[in-house]
Length: 309
Image (cartoon, one colour):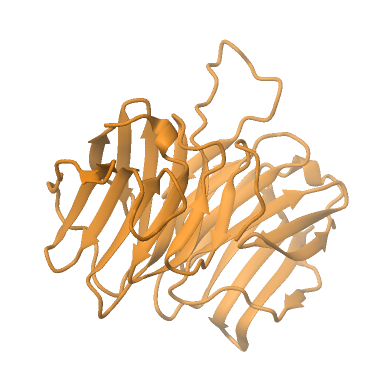
């Protein structure tokens, strides 16, 4: 499944089998943020997301939050299960999903309940009925394809009156494309980008790290662009000219599937991970790489999260 992380490490699970049963490091806590991206079935009518006390999918154990997506009834039922008895169902809210389409569910844990969002829009609030300590495992059941699961912390930014002694992560949820955003002026920066292609027939999208007119790192994901098919091209634009392209034919992206790209800045190179796996290295061509101060993303892509520190 995945190695046991500490409660402070984000968990990333790519394309899990269903039913999925995974431990939540440290259990549910105030500030835990769960992101689930996937695709609903064309032919089936139901799946559920559950936060449970033990790793048993059938029958469900004590369940602090049960989210049951019922396409035939056009409703999403929220409930809890304790000592074999279901509580009162909560069914209000419009039905935000369609059969056969991509979706993203985000659950934010608060002291007194759970904020639930679908596809970037708030859907419902479920008041907590039992202690958070019951939420030790995430269980996903039913007919659904999951692209990835991410479990992390929704860290608040410190107040300006108390400047931090460490890099502060900045998180942008569902930013519009094209995106242009300033980067922190620190060493060994980490940039996380999650999203999915914006159409069934995308051409390309690119991630650019910039300093003024210079582009020390250009990552171009090409599905169908010119003569390029399913390739990733890395390059740099320095002193008014493009350098030599570095072409990678292994292509971990696909239409209809979500992705996670992580770019790690080191003293000698940029390391790129895709969906939790090392993908490529790009040696620095711009001596003052640490002066890069802008991130730009453009092309045929929907961004769900951009985070950097």
